Image (cartoon, rainbow, N blue to C red; front, side):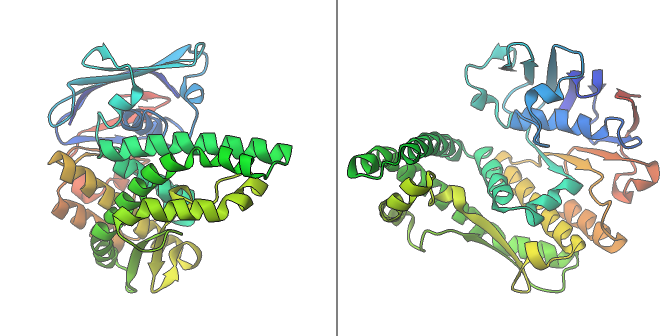
Length: 370
């Protein structure tokens, strides 16, 4: 639960100090005045980066040297206070827990557990595989230190192997010695890549049925399917490192020619089907929005299971593109699964769903909350 929020020079918000009640807050304001910026600043305390994909330097208020976001929390959070600051001049980011600067930013990841529902979530469905891989990585890395470590190690080894492959491609080397240079990074990729695949497969298997049930309850007449799609053949988790090693060996010469790693969990996908057809290609806008909300609800359930309490819900006008029947169904499902603190932003007071009309209200205008 978020008790107090302090923001300085984040996007168009020059200064904000806000006490929040346990139920949360509903913020009303015209588009372009900073409602989503408020949610972005709060979500920054979970991800340590913009969930909208912006660079740190680009979220510093125009003309300001730095931004700072601080929150006072209550249980079951990992700390009583968490703060993040970024200095534009030195390109330095600092994070503290209970006033103590953390030597590793990863130690602060997930300090303020939250899940954000936004119209932009349709990109989870309509976007490429990278969007869905990122969804899985965020959901798993922020609820499992083991997964976070495997992800960091895998990305580090992949970065170095790809750099080696690009250099070998540039020089035209495809000899045995060149292959050996590329193979140096493969044991780490096999070990940690196997961990990523195993965790993603387990998450998908656990949530596939609840996801389908959510889609049906929201209003989908056709059956919804979620499955993990990987080039790695089905097998036990213990077999995954060996399978990856064989695939690297098979693909190595082609990778030397193309200058990029062609196999591994960085190329996998979370496949979503509706009536047996690819939802990305054949789903309507409403069907894709429904699936995206169902995915966010499973993300919230993942956090809830780890914390033992629901995460902070950040709702960015989440039902703007849905009909009344689906919106009502989603609100009913949220009530059943358990809703904790909510911060809702909408353009007009009449856009506040009935379930949240009792929330305290504020108005956002030109970056100022009143």
